[in-house]
Length: 124
Length: 124
Image 1 (cartoon, rainbow over the protein chains, first blue to last red):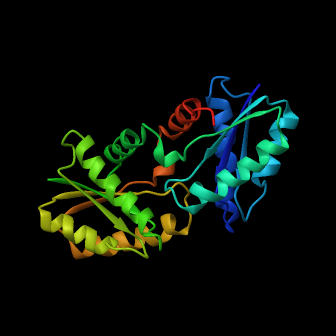
Image 2: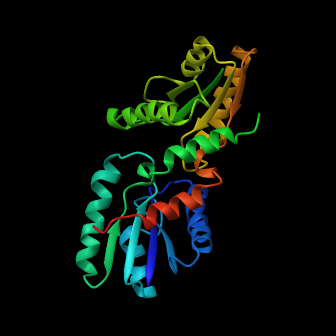
Image 3: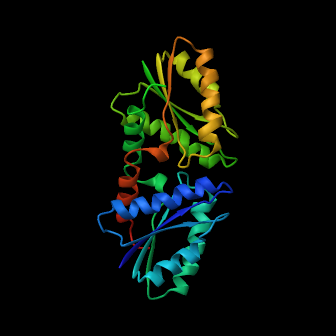
């Protein structure tokens, strides 16, 4: 069973974290069953933390987990912190396949998305 | 002449700012001439600041500028700070149309992008 763990930075502002939690729910409803489990997790400042998110996916029955960093820039969190945490999670869950995707800012279609979003902007 | 101003938060880490500058260049090359001017700007911590970015677009000959906040979450910067700055810029450049797009995280195609990016993730 495939799981998607959407990893955001986490904010002191509850509304920002709630956006990520809501986004994970929307992803689950929009992925045409590609991921039967979609969960949010946070690097810091908010629950659920990444290792707990991984453990929850495993507990849900996930055999394969894709971890997607919901970050636009490849800063230290993306380059160092998240890979280190995921590496430790792999050790903890040796019978589960855990793939760390590149951060969202590196998505192939990001340029197209930005242009489409800009051109659809309404006059303000 | 249409311009696109890509507005990122700005980082103390030069590499993160350089990514945004590079992204603006890529956007200019990828937009099939929809925007003859594409510039990066930053809310804080890095040059070019937003008002200077707007002024540079006007100086380049822009008659219409779309400002696109390169943010995933609708935090205070997106909801308050950037709109206030853009409002002041409109007063400064009354003969230029300045449209503030919603932040990138609100893009219609964001869910599709995330799912496509997750499913294309290579095993690590």
